[in-house]
Image 1 (tube, rainbow, N blue to C red):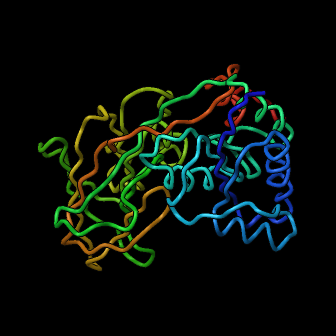
Image 2 (cartoon, helix red, strand yellow; image 1 turned 30 degrees about the horizontal axis):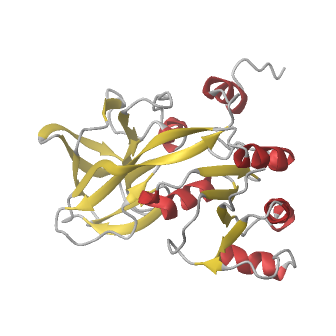
Length: 293
């Protein structure tokens, strides 16, 4: 085992009481190896209520932490939240899947100790994933400007479809008449974009995909552009309002706010096992070739 005391920051899902034992196993193993830990404040309180929080482990709030590694315990939603907190810090993230599908969080609870040992020994590889960001042309900051999976503009629940005037690098593309538009990264291509008919973009490709949500015209199809592209969106709606969501974190916007979406100035680093196969994950998670008869 390495001599250096590595620092680990833990994020977790507070809606899975029956699976919180996985967090206890992570902390027990790291503590036994003499590693330093800190736990996100809400998750720390959740574990403490269940008697699973070791004494002396500090908590932190938001982005106020520093670590060598981040551990996400939950599903892909928890992983996305951890990635948002990491942001430009450049800290590699490892995901333990105690949720359902687990595209991003791909370490099973049964593999916790083995995977942590591999990290301590340096036996892993790091994938760099594109993140995207948005800003409003009026200069007023948005609540959640960064995303690892996707940024979506959507109609409000009780509204009719919206009109999304779209430009790419300053050139007019089209005006989508739809329930929304998803701008996704390759990481997010197997998420919301895929459920709306978007293509799967191979991990590591430097592209973005524009996928309409329930478009009024059947001729409208997803469009793949380089991730250097700058996407400008101007939305009009009968309600004069629409929703904008970054990795599921949504806020209300008025139609006078023009949004600019582009590549973020940093990459998200994700830890993978040396034998991890992206195509193997696709086969397993999407059940390609499975005969359920």
